Image (cartoon, rainbow, N blue to C red; front, side, top):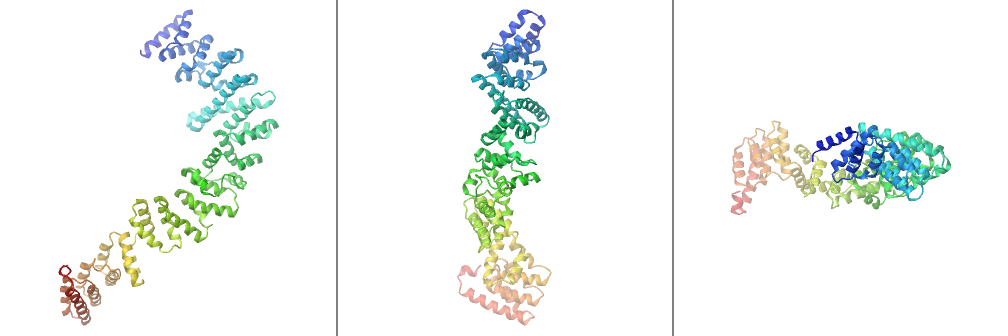
Length: 535
């Protein structure tokens, strides 16, 4: 059955002005069809009938969210029937009214609930307190998630509720549920709100005692948020500082970590410095294991802000580099200077030995700042890591090792370093052989000569033989002589034939070098296998 015929029928009943129309609407609230029930409820709200609205209260849990939303408007005003049920009805009617206020979120009827709480006792009073708490929780949750216009409306609603709650502070003796009143104010107000300031600093001692009790024990997110946000005010109450310094439940820990400011203002810097320690904030592995990794950066910031002794800060520095997440370690560079070099080296070495690729990669990113032996060997070895993040970090830390750098290094290094240098060059720079060959074809004579010598130093002469053979045709006699000497270590028939041609060179030193190399090659070829000779 579509909505149009149902709505048309309800409209016709409204226009009939029949005394039986309201009876029909009330009966329709009890049928199984949600569409009929909702259409009847809208008709009752439009009629303004108090008796009809009393029936809506009785059937409140059967109505759809759309109908409940209408009740929050002027057209759906439920104040009078709710007042009759809650303040003048029997306990059963009062419970129905409380149910309706909670389900429909009728925040405008909070004063009525507060008046009810001044009188109610026993289980029905407990139910009233529960409804107040439910409305407060929903307002708090809405403010935490609302945006733009909805947030403005929510803030206005919270402002009105706080005004109503503040009236209760006029007399502690007449208030039957003072704990609920205090908790509601602290959940909805920040520490700078006039109602919260009055409650904390100017209310009766009985109210203030409740404040400290709630702040010390309640685990409601709003209370924990209030307590943490209080560290941002200009004049921090000493009692709040004392409570923050002594709470250690995990709910408070997580709230304080989540809300720690990344950029502190003057008030925050001063107030956090007043904290000389927190019972749960200790430099142990358990701390970092108990806090999810996504909050480790905030945890580092909290350690940075709290006024610990230097020895405790040092212990935190060690624990950060030993147990914190990679991102937290990167955010803790200012702690690095607190460690002795050998302590920091040990932390990096532990990371390099870790089974976790992310920690291993972090260790590689820090290895240049250490005094670890063979640290460049550590980098080179990890160029073959099965983990891409480790290989990428090794390459990034090494940087692109250019052929020109290798040539420069070859001229001053010990001969034994040649093969290691070649290994590093080839792993870091996959185009090293091509670039070395291009360097041997450079128009500048000295660059051709240095490249040829570097290739021989690194034992790469067999991989650049074609380029070396080309240099045998160079016009520079010194270059030809040097290349002829290098080719003595490339015992192939092709090289021997090219050296044979140099025996007629105009330069006696070139002829001499060619003959010496040719003799050496022929001896090697004579003693080698046929396979080697044909290579």
